[in-house]
Image (cartoon, rainbow, N blue to C red; front, side, top):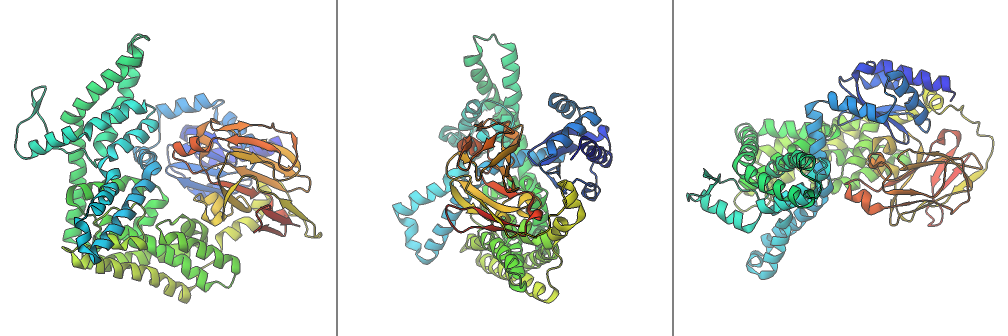
Length: 627
């Protein structure tokens, strides 16, 4: 692309997003222009711009996929918008941020995502114990059962400490101060005091009667406490002399935050959470088919927009307050329906690649992971996603007639967590859940076999003129039989692109390739060629081989926000490299501690110039690219 083309693309994007006054923040990663807008705009307006591969929206952020020319488009965009520096853009965001709803959703995602798999592991252990004690009741009296039972409940009892860690990271406060305050909330001594208050005894703090609010397994009290600590800590650091800050900032933060939480923040937030949970449960008890149908049908739409994170506190509050939750029972059915739709596509299709994509989406769905099914198959063909939502609504509606509910938390609700509905006091709950899951699995298969699965949306995107224009190249005629080898860039497990939880990669919008879950942090050159692009945040590198293969290596997902900290470059842009030469070292632990996946997509961005891009099954070869 020439400078005039960058400016034209930037001008068109700026016009379609409503001009400079509608922009809260603009950044970019290796392939995408990332925009935070004050007012929403239709994605179709951005999709239709020449030079834009695709546009997606996630939790309030518009991601405009440009490709490796994104930096030039970004610079032109910032200049035309009057935002010539990152700092200026950030200042605009502070003055007029995105909607409150998106900020809440973003906070919930940042807080819960890093430890959701820990809760999932504990939930699986609880499910196993439920099954064992169902067939072997006397096991519950043994010491072995009691030890494993306490292990399964430990993450939930001490949940406020997890929240303190992730929330302090999100709110930019000292994690050790936050953890100490959270530990006070779940300490055995305070738990005993709360029990005595709940039993009618009087206990005062600064002359005020202590509320019987319990903080073990709580969500909102520690979350709001850490939020308050983040402001208190900053104020103390500004106000105290530098020599006193190391001791008195933690001391004053703790002695102010914990009593304030016990007297004010805790009772208010816990009461609000209880009211919301009670309101939902009233709907569930009064009109269960409405609650089930809505959750079963709409859950995956909530997941797509990230809104599901806002519902997690209600689920946890239900378990904490009532000992059961119906929300997870219905979400398991919705998840099963998406997996069933992916399986339906695999069974219906005659194309081997589509069959593999369908099966790749179905199998993770059994374990409650729907991203491969949704992004790799169901949304790609559109009709399967709609059919899955309808099937989920039908299955959940039937399950609701049996008063289905879960009695153990499922971190990743899905068909295999149906055992969480087993309870001797509610025998119909399990059978209702089982029937609902079976309906959700089979109904989309039947409908897809009858109605078909529609047109391939990704094929439409990747073969039209817009795709070729966005990369600034004409399609090369397939007049040679030469092949190029792309060797492994990192050690680790290989993952199909359809299984990558990022629609831009999983849907093949950027091109064909493979992803790697790295086992070490050494990133090496996969062929002889040149470094043609290094992202400003160092999380992505673009290479071009001597044979013309253009490769994007994107280390981790959403790692642009880490500002280059985990990445140590060993090469520079424009440098010639040899196969096996070290490109960068990556601190994988630092990425994981930030709650981000380390999955590394390796994409042939000019796939349209080649007749095939084939993933190798050999350990010493990654891809074979043939003209």
